[in-house]
Length: 248
Image (cartoon, rainbow, N blue to C red; front, side, top):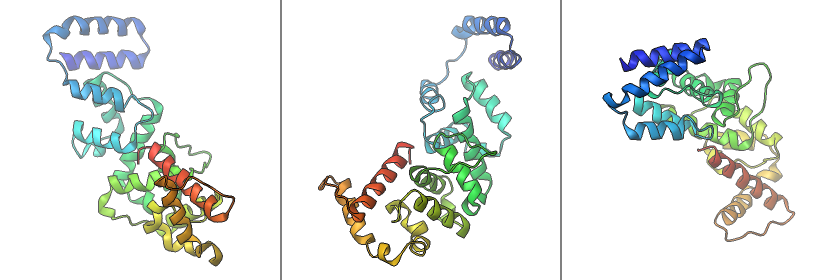
């Protein structure tokens, strides 16, 4: 009966019938005492993850695995939304719906690893910027780092392998934002290609940049001078910190 009421509530909400919605909600509340309560942990997790636009793609992926099994991404998206409604009586908002679309696509396809455009869209979605397929928007360095980390978490069998086009796109995007040294968390993915895109003079400064970066991160040295090494080290700190804010 609970599922029937939930289904009726779902249909009334979609139909835009507020009177019917109110009637069904009232009936659900009256019958609540005779129904088995939902596990408290699941409701709390739902309210703090899928209802929070700041939730990371990683935490959403883990939540869906726990609630619906590791093969949930094989379902049609409408089925997933219906199951979320039936189990939690809440509809997804745009940002987290977009994140789930991106997660589901990543689980179904390798294309984001070698197609720069699909990588671009995932980087936007995973950071909470709804992907726009009509206009290309470039993700920030932090969004890019977050995307690479998240993709490796969701698809560990790929072992961090990205196609040449995606690697080159990442390098170009970072350089375009004034980052001329590979962020530490991306060196294994883009290090070699990055070195081919910057000057030899800049490559020779990478070790000094990383040393300064470590000093800034460890707070052993907070002094930033107007030098190429210090400026690049600060940009690495900003990029890596930004990625952490997205949950990677």
